[in-house]
Length: 315
Ligand SMILES: Nc1ncnc2c1ncn2[C@@H]1O[C@H](COP(=O)(O)OP(=O)(O)OP(=O)(O)O)[C@@H](O)[C@H]1O
Ligand SMILES: [Mg+2]
Image 1: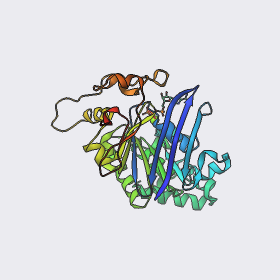
Image 2: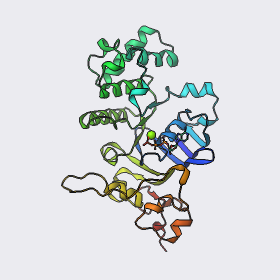
Image 3: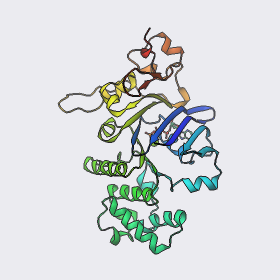
Image 4: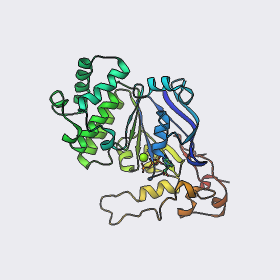
C-alpha cells in the first residue's frame, strides 16, 4: 500500500529550480532509493517532505502521507507528522547532535515532545531503541555525550532518534556515506530489519552499490529532475538513461582495472543547460537533446520503468 506520495514537487531559490517536477512514491515495507550526484536536489526533496524547507525557498507541488496533504498543513499539524509519522535520519551526523546534551536526553526529548511520556519512561524507551540498532551497553551509555562515541555509534544514535517514535516512513539521507565499509553494511542491515517491520524507507545515496545491497525500487535524479525510475534489479541490469549507465560504469567492480567516470561535473542550478540537462555530458547527444526537454517515457518491460531520454522514442 502507498504510504507516501510526492507529486510534481518543485523547490526553487530566486526562480532557479533546484528540484523540478519530482514525483515519487513509497509503499509500506519497501526501501526506495533516491540516487544522484552531489547537488542534484536529493536533500531538498527530503527536507520538503518533512516540511523543513529553507525559508528562502519556494516549494510547490503536493506531498501525501496517507491521505493527508502535507504542504497544505499548518505548522502545528506539520509538527505532529514530522519526527512522529515521518522521520529523518539527517545527512550530517556530527552537526545533527547537540554536543552539550547526553545522547539519552536527546533521544528522550523526542518522546517527551511527541508522545508526552515522562522522563523516566522516555529514557527507558531510548535505551531499548538503541539496543534495537545494536548499540552496545545502551542503558549504561545514555548519560554519555556525543563526542564520546565513534562516527558509526553516533549514526546509530541518530537512527534511534528517528525510530523512537515508531514512524511509518523513514527518510535516510546518506546514512552510510561517512562510515567505513563494515559499519555501512551493519547500518544497511538495520534498514532491512526496518523493512521487515513494514516501514517505508526513502534511502538517499549517491552510491549504486548501496542500491544493489538493499533497495527495492530506485529513482535516479540529475540536476533537479528524475531521469529514470524502475525496480532496483531493472536499473542495475537494464539501465536505459545514459546518466544511469554512466553511474553504473563508474562503480568499482572486482577484477576491473580502471573505472570509467562520467566526464565533467554537473553544472550548478544557476547554469542548468537547455533541453535535456544531461546533454552536455552525454555520449549519445544529438541535436534535439540540446533544445527540447524529454518527458519521462514508459519503457515497455514487465516492470514499471521510465526514462527521460529521446532514445526511448521508437518510431
Ligand atoms: N538554502 C539554499 N539556497 C540556495 N541554494 C540552495 C540552498 N540549499 C540547496 N541549494 C542548492 O540546491 C541544489 C540541491 O541541493 P541538495 O542539498 O538537495 O543536493 P543533494 O543532492 O542533497 O547533494 P549532496 O549529495 O551533496 O548532499 C544545490 O545546487 C544547492 O547548491
Ligand atoms: Mg544532500
